[in-house]
Amino acid sequence: MRSIINEKNLNNKKILLRLDLNVPLEKGKITDTTRIDKILPTLNFLIKENAKIIILSHVGRPKGKFVKELSLEPICKELQNKLGKKVKLITENIKEIKNKNFLNNYNDEILILENIRFYSEEEQNDNKFAKLLSNFGDIYVNEAFSCSHRAHTSIYKIPKFLPSFSGLQLDLEVNALNKITSEITRPITCIVGGSKISSKINVIKNLIPKFDNIIIVGGMANNFIKYFGNSVGKSIKEKNCDKIIEEIISLSKKEKCNMIYPEDVIVSKDLNGSPQKKELSEILSDEMILDIGPKTIEKIRKIIANSKTILWNGPAGYFENPNFAYGSIQIAKKIIENNKANKIFSVAGGGDTVSLLNNLNAVNKFNFVSTAGGAFLEYLEGKKLPGITALN
Image (cartoon, rainbow, N blue to C red; front, side, top):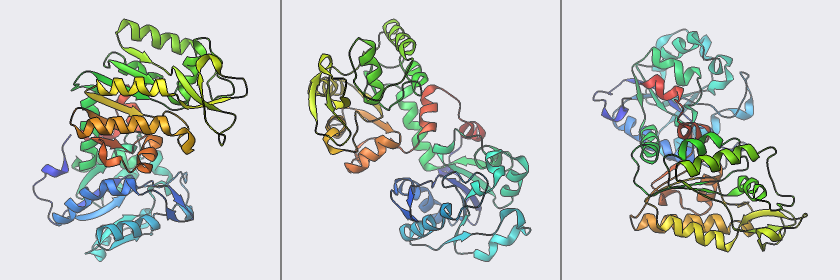
């Protein structure tokens, strides 16, 4: 994989730049700019090199149809503000642009082609569409790690037609994930949350042989609590999970990886109720588990203190309500404390984890925070990502 940072002559070259600008929008307003902020270094690098930038991106799932609410227009304005440079949204139908030099009409501007998923060919991984898109550039750069698990035209097929490179952010993403899966400094710990154990079973199985500790928190921990004979009341849980849990426990024993799940919890009658500390044997049928308890927090903090590398994917509880955010906040604080003292290499990823760290203003206090969801997990599963293999 060649990085664009090492390319010597980019002066006046047309760079077809695939970004993931799929930011949350409410009534045409961006509610979280993390994904935009992360790709600014690449844009500033290309501007400094006097390259001509043509951006490809998507927002939402328009399924090959024009959806006004999913236009890139608000993102275009946000980029213009952040870069202090004119950014022009090209709304013409790409398939009807006959003149290859059409883009020369906008010489001093950064260009964004309208939502690439307005074209059904994008998700169909269409060769003809890739050829058409490649006509707009001299060089292709993939700066959309979070889309790189998709074999879509603008991710997988364009590299067949143009010299192709990785962007600065994609390099950081891959290097950070390699550090915690290949170039390991032990002891290494993974904190994994989320509501469904079945969606992360392959990640857990792939990490058990490589990690010293795997800490299960969040909704998926309820399955472990139930498996060991405790009531979980009306907590979120998955059906038919016993076999998966048996498999995880058996593999962890074989590989000498410590599996940790909550010893005590915080419960409430509903999501807006008041918090109450409970031992696992005390949970009532009308209560729901919404956070980890103080004994569990202390145990996790000790494990973090003794770790050299840490991966965190998924909060410890229902952090959207401050009553049930304490466990997640304490985990974040301990990682940040050890990071500050250079005792740990820390990587966090996944949408909810990023939201939590944004709320705490702590995104820059980790070694690396990934905005990728599916791609992040598939990389950890050991899968080959189409967007990365295309660059290779």
